[in-house]
Every structure is written in C-alpha cells, then in structure tokens.
Image (tube, helix red, strand yellow):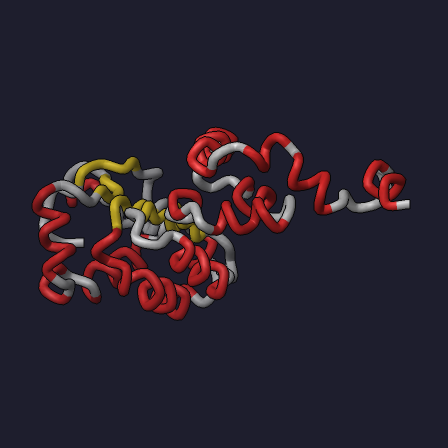
Amino acid sequence: MDAETASSPDGPPSNKSTLLSPINRIPFDIFQVIIAMCQERPSSTFRFTASRVCHLWREDILAMPLLWNSLHINKRVPCWEMLEAMLKRSGQAPLDIYIGQAPFVKSALPHLRKIMQIILPHLERWRALNLSDVPYKKLKFLKATYTIDRLDSSLRTALLTGALRTSSWGSPTSIPSNGQTPHPISTPFPSSRI
C-alpha cells in the first residue's frame, strides 16, 4: 500500500521518495545557485512559492538571506508582519528597498511613519533606496523628518562613500512641484541629505 501511495498522483510523496529526489541530494551551495537563478527579479513571488514545495526546501530557502534582502513596499495596506519577517530572514545581507506609490493612496503619513519605523533600525544595511511615484508632499515630509543630522553615522558613511544608492531626479530643482514625481532611477547618492 505504501508503494501505491508513493507512486499515486493523488497521494503525497513518501518521505523516502522525497529524500531520494536528485534535487534534494545536491549540495546546499549548488541548490542556492539554482534557486537564485530561478528568481527572475527581486520583486517576484518565487521565493514564497519555492518555500512551499516541501519541508526541506522551506528550511533551505529561509536560510538564504539574499532571497529576502529585496523589500518591495507597494501595496495600499502593506503587510507589516511580512515586511518584518523578510527583514529577519535577510540576516545581515545588504538591503535593496523599493517604496512605491500604493501605500500612500490612503493613510499616507501613518504608512510612511510605520515604514520608517520598520526599516530605520536596519539603516546600516541599506544598499539602495528607491522611492518611486511617492507623492511630492510625502517626499518633503520624509526629507524634513529624516535629515542627515538625525541619522546615525553608518548612514553618513554610506552616503559619503557612495555605498548607498537612492532615487535621483537630477538636480533638486528638477523635482516637480505639482505633487507628482517622475519615475526615478537608482544612482549613487550624491549629497549628504535624504
């Protein structure tokens, strides 16, 4: 009966057949390379899907910080618990943070404060910060609230050495005053203020 269940398409695979599967016998470092190649872009949901394949894959994928270091915050109501879980799973890997327009459609300032409350403790790990289509008034609030003087020395060092990239619109005077922002690109951060 066990042999029938293991080979039945309707039944779950037996532990023995799962362990004997070739993908589960390869070294972890090779598994990491394969999984990293399968994740097309940092915002993809592949990491979540792959972590649900089996218990072994879940353990391995949760132990891969580079699958979790890209944070895409672009939902009207962000899942704060998931964001915190991803930060924990990212270990000490450098963070690439993308904040889109959606969290600011409703409850803009509370969402901005909550986002900053969650990501600021990881400031020394920020590699890139991309603010895309964030309303101009929120950018002004962000700039006024989180100036370089209020941030710790690790951010200052990252900004001055160019280790942190952030969105750039060219010169500060090119930021439109009509409440809209252009689609930015990530570039080395040229000044000493956010």
